[in-house]
Length: 73
Image (cartoon, rainbow, N blue to C red; front, side):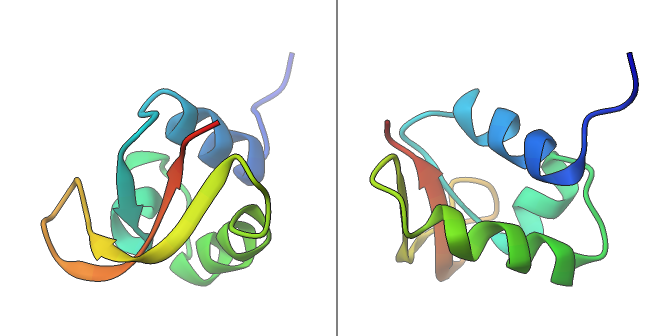
């Protein structure tokens, strides 16, 4: 079985951290997905679903107050 694609890696990484929100930089490094622009393209559609929240909040990783994504499904 091959390596999971970047979207799958991000989704799985966020699901393992249910209830916490992370900025793009922390998602990129935590899920090992680069470049960061790729993370942006994956996160935006997730934020449109009911299972995820994409709002300005405090990142659970670095503590910065930025747009963050979290899995709450």
